[in-house]
Image (cartoon, rainbow, N blue to C red; front, top):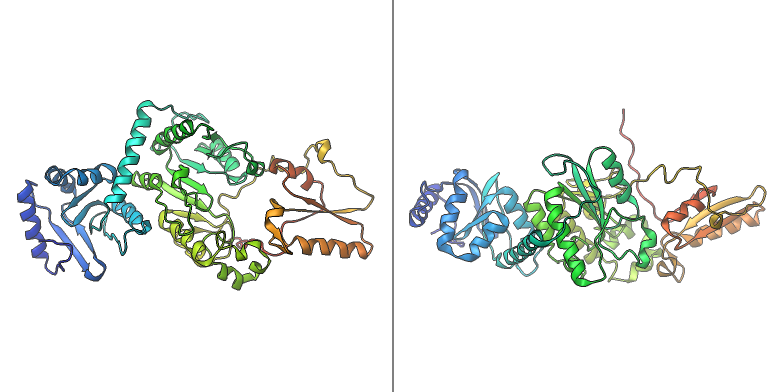
Length: 458
């Protein structure tokens, strides 16, 4: 009866089986399952539950007889496992299906559903449910004894009351200023970092509204769970940055290029209706190295071309698949529409999160003495900068094209033009603007830039 291997061809058979199971466990009115179709070879079928409002109460009664394992599924995902079927809302089935597709231990695992309320064939999801249950227990413990984070303070917060978004991880300076601008427009918006504020990479950042780092491991863990407990009740959307960092918790970060770590906190947020967004970090983010090479030839100038631990077809595409499996929107920042960045169902190619603060980068800055440039009469100053220059340059390879820029400046000098290159590396990001504003020409890259979308026609 309704076994996982049985190919159901008759609606009458489904109704009879459901009625028999309902009588067996005291469901009351039988669950009537309107079957849309069965795909036996994929162990999945599309269906719609006609008696949608009864499934939860019926499932609870069944679970009392079925055991604790199924109760766990109900608690963490609001879904009911009845025999070989999982019954519940489309959202819960969709999120659980994402987890199944990301879990590489479930060979051939798939969970398909149909409709606002639906049913799906169940594969072995016990491991996923166990992780969700364990995480739920830790969050509940934090709520009982943790401390709330309330910075910046905003009156009337709550997902039901206002637009809200949390920007997670450092995206140079973009998230910090975007959150500030949204707050001025009435949003509940903050930028959050979990990194050590004294780490070397912080010279490239402008800070965050909240920093959860603590050098004490227990204090750090407590900060993360305490903040998550508030965040899942406060924000309607989480938007993050960084390859392999799909989580608030470093323990859930990807450590392998297969990108198969399960972001249990993101799964929980999606089960609660929170949207997930992502901003890409560069050309290798979701695009095969071979695709970039064919499109531009830039890979021949990049030090990562022969570093599969950093950039490869398989790894780049694996991360793209994970992003597009989990995320609701992906900001590609004007990158070429290749591979996963070309999946237009979720991709935003117009300006979205890569923002600047016009006040911070205004042209009439007061220049500190340490950054004031001397200038000869009629001298032309060309500005060019590369962060982590030593790490990103080797044997003539440099993705920013620094060698070509140097050669161009030398050629202009040989022609008698008064020009000089002001090359900057590893200067704090907040300070490079003082050099930029004094330059006549700013050269970002001579090899690979971004694709700027055409403005809409009016």
